[in-house]
Length: 312
Ligand code: NAD
Ligand code: UDP
Image (cartoon, rainbow, N blue to C red; front, side, top):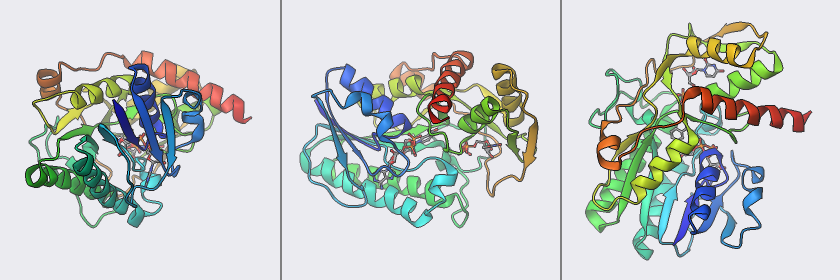
């Protein structure tokens, strides 16, 4: 198949492109390089089945593809809040453009949605039937509500135009190829620990997150795309939940760092708890994460060590 991956030069997108090429598909990787990087996909450039397209998905594009994975959108709070109007445009106009393309060429399209559609959830763990608690005038809304509208568009194109859609709600995912300056908790803590800098815990660190290794996530996304009788939404994430303070201590121990833990102000609307209920993914996709936090972290730490070495 010919498969379009928007945001293909980003962290998750690059792993997805690699996996799809390994399965024998032709891959069109589309990216505007806002948070993605050529280094993430440089090793794929020699593959004759790989094509790179520099394009911004807020503009329409004419292409032919059998399947579309729509991942283009900055995912780290510091990056999506850098130009919030652009973030909203990327989610909404990007979804409209990709859905229009899917409709024209009759491609199946999978939208990378997020646990952020649940906002600061009042129930835990979060299951797909929960409608969420998002502050629509807050700093995170450009991302959260952008993704919520993208889900609305997916469902309406499906109901109105019979577009073949799939919806996955991704929970915090980590692994090699996260950007050094990404600003998310895993990359921040690992890089700070490796440099011996203070580990910056926002708030008192009692907020929780659950961390999924990238290869597990990619497996779930591919299983969902290949499902014929289930469109989602489905949660994809690891249900093992940690407080951020616990996680900071784990990283310190894991890396053997001398770093101190420094408490910084909690960003506005930072969700207090996040943990996926993955019953539906287990039932419909026979999917659950396989990579333990220890194994995933050791691969991630090795990656950041070699990145820091290269940059020094
Ligand atoms: P990332 O920032 O590494 O990747 C996003 C990619 O999209 C980058 O390559 C970026 O350059 C590209 N992009 C951004 N705006 C674009 C535009 N207007 N046109 C074309 N390309 C554009 O982030 P990621 O962690 O790889 O996330 C990928 C997708 O998964 C995103 O849609 C994100 O919302 C979703 N997601 C990720 C996580 C996570 O924990 N990593 C959690 C939930 C959802
Ligand atoms: N966080 C932190 N220190 C950092 C970066 C993040 O304490 O250097 C916290 C952040 O406040 C949030 C959690 O870690 O509670 C996860 O943040 P991230 O930006 O990775 O993703 P989010 O789940 O908030 O979108």
